Length: 382
Image 1 (cartoon, rainbow, N blue to C red):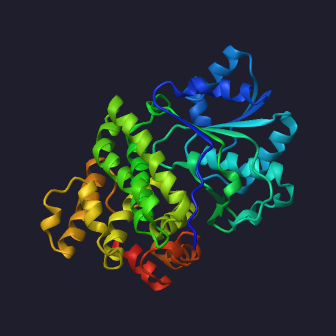
Image 2 (image 1 turned 30 degrees about the horizontal axis):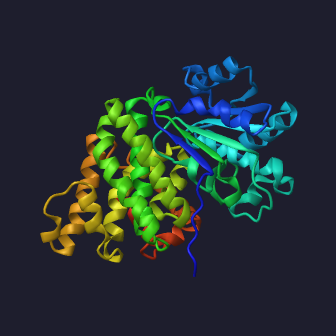
């Protein structure tokens, strides 16, 4: 079977990358942008870094900010209506996964109106046309939504998140500027950074992994181990390193899938509105231990990438333990909670586990699992 890689048509990286937004729009003949960004980014002036460029160039735009941290079907529906009323011909999305995922769904539905029922996009949607031309500008170093073919929407009514996988949703242009991430608070920097590490590790061990994606994932793990602590302290080197690391991880996992860390995190987000990065970070070390017997030599590679010394001389069992310990230590160092005691209610475990088992990420997990085993994994963190 042939392996497939889908990436952005164009991406810009490094300080000042946002200067390329207006030239990309005008060179392609676009006249009006629909700018998707969440209310906090607008409130604290982060989105203004981009809209100031549009204003200076006289480029017309309309702002849309009805976006929640775990975007809902209603957010997408109101966004579709707002885009249709705006007369815009392109999208600029500024934010983390929430803003970019919302923009992806809007852009897909506008050009594929037969999928106006947002739930119909779940799984691998057979859309025929690419989404509205989109420039994605991440403000967090974690989700890599700007380079993936995935997006996640919350079904509030059914208390579940659903994953949409569609090659037509990837933004044509990604603008990864560490200056857009410099105002992230420590907690959000830590959580999104651990989300990026989860992407890299799950993508490296997933059933669909292959040489090209392995290359991306190992490099991302190296960069995250080197730069996440600095990013949490808001050093320029840390910010730039994490901006690149999370994008590289996205290049990989978008094309091969993830595993049950994400499945279980999606359930927590849907039921408790738990921030996705926090959920992943808490779950990752425990699920790494669970998956270890089904990963061959890959944890030895992960341990090396995390900076563990003497890995080559270790037994396979010790190398696996070292990889898990290094991830746990990084999580502790950046202030991630150690357990789910303040989040999960025991009476919800059955529903959480059933939702996680049904999640689109679960089949990629290297170790085949069951609802009962997922319940046990949640319990270990209570």
